[in-house]
Image (cartoon, rainbow, N blue to C red; front, side, top):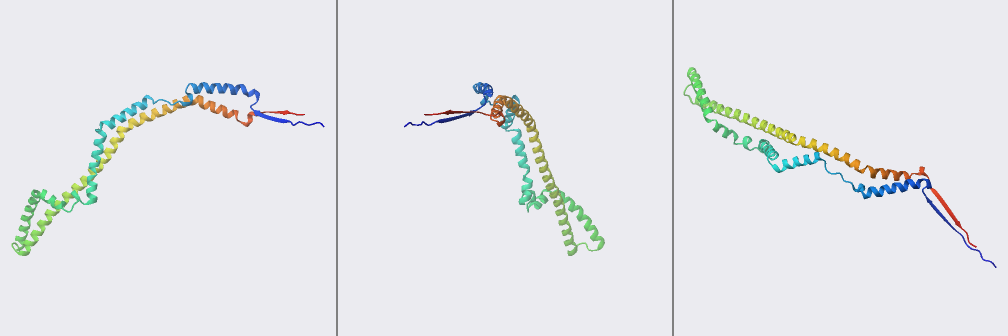
Length: 230
C-alpha cells in the first residue's frame, strides 16, 4: 500500500513592490528626523514673550502701582459699605455729628432768624407769649436740622460719587498698565506657535505620508505559496 502526504499553503500580503522604495525612503527620513529631535521639538519662548513676562513680573514684584491702585479701590468701597450697613455718614448719629460740626453756621442762621421772628411777633402783638416762644423755638430747631441735613446729604452724595470715580479710575489704570504687556505677550505667542508649526512640519509630513501608504487606493500585494506532499 502506498501512503499520501499532506500539503501546506502560506499567504503573505503587503505593499506593492513599486511602493517599497518610497516607504523605505520615508522610514529613513523618519529615523533622521527623530534623531535630530524633530519628534520632540518644543519651541523656545520668543523675545516678545520674555519681554512681556519680564514686565509682568516687574509689576508684580514692585508692589507699588498695582497694589496702591487695589488699596485705593478697596478704600473707596467704604462709602458703599457704610451705606449698606448704616454706619459712618449713613449712621443714626450722623445728623447729630453734622449739626455739631456746623454749630457756628447754624448759630448764625438761627440768630438772624430769631431777629426776624421777634420783629414779626412785635408787629402782631404776640411778642413774649408762651405760644410765640414755643413756635420760635420750633422754627429755630428746624432751621438747624435742615442745615445739618442738607450738608449731610451733600457729603453722602460726594462720598458715593467719589467712590465710584476711584473704582472706575482704578480699573482703567490697571487695564492701561497691563494692556501693553498683554499685546506684546499675544504677539509673542503667535510667533511661538508659528515657529512650533514650522518645527513640527517634518514630523507632520511623515505622519501624513504614512497615512497615505495605508490608503486602500494604494492597493496591496498578495502572495500565496502552495506546498504539496506525497
